[in-house]
Length: 219
Image (cartoon, rainbow, N blue to C red):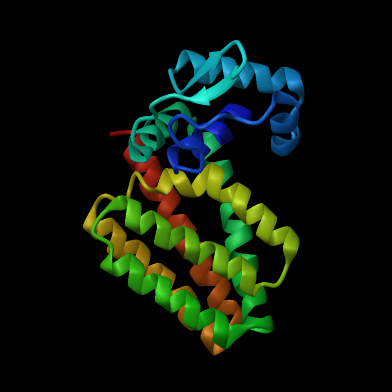
């Protein structure tokens, strides 16, 4: 889990080329893992060429010339078993559907307007990177509309472990449009204050993503 989260952070650019990682004790605390698990994860990423460890005055672990996020996401998708991918999808669906339901109760119009704006960004995107940013902002805004700090924290973790995989799909214009259509259904349902429709639209978005990721990993 620690290796996956660090790999995702590098893949989406949260950790950039040449950036020094926090001290192991601090990083283990941030990731919620033991020091032993973190050292194993760092060893895995070191073997993959994603980090390099230096000694001396400026010693520590540094990000080392990461490949493109889409490439890394594709490699991670192949590593995951079908069961692991389905489990990640179940988690993402639980967060998306409940956040959408709460947003319809607590901040429907303001949240719906912001969500619609991110759908427009998705439609206008001409690359997987731009589409990924629009999707990420959409999901964060949806959880913010739910007005739950715990959901928002969980949302950030879901972005690291599931959403970054979706960029594998977003290089294709048809896929971007299909995702945007399902995002728009969520935005419309939230604006209308329709809890059931918001829940169903959230479920349909994630179901589509998981189905297409399953298909892609088999190609």
